[in-house]
Amino acid sequence: MRIITAPGPVCYPIVAAQMERDDIDIEFAKEGRADIVLDSTVSLVKRGLPIDLVTINNLAVVFPKLGHEVGLARKGGAADVLIRAYVNYLTLKQ
Image (cartoon, rainbow, N blue to C red; front, side, top):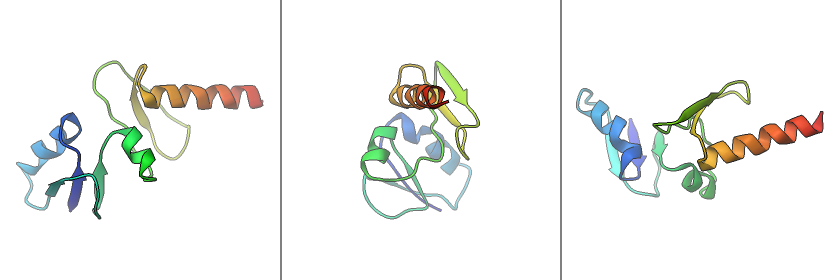
């Protein structure tokens, strides 16, 4: 499994997993082709990549039933602001 990740907290879980598994190949980069891309939500959106899961530690909220995926977003973070805007939009639309 090839993974491209930004350096920093976003890569810590996958680096820890690599210690126990031999099939994980991590490349610290911003561009390239891989099975998994780990980066900030802002960077993923700018690159036009789909966001399947958002995980941010500390002050987290789960938003189920907004799509096919479940997101975990930090309160006040970019993902939280976008989700709140989307929920408000859906509420006003009804």
